[in-house]
Image (cartoon, rainbow, N blue to C red; front, side):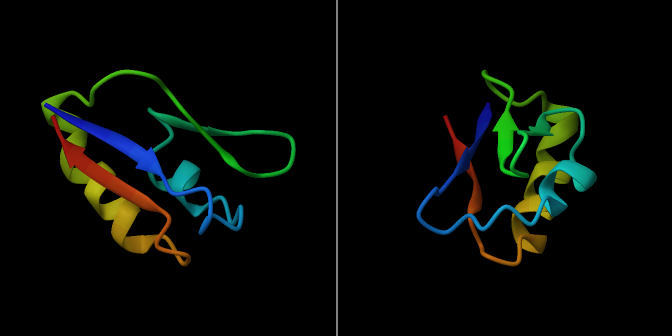
Length: 65
């Protein structure tokens, strides 16, 4: 299984991640991501990797558990 993580030192709150992966990411009132706790389902790993690659600040990563 895999997990989605945010590097808060890099995140600028662009919000693109929430548009690309709304099943796991919501935005707080300032536009920063709130990632649902737990491991990613196998069906969401590919979408999570695409969201991580599209992040303008390279603040997202998908870690293998």
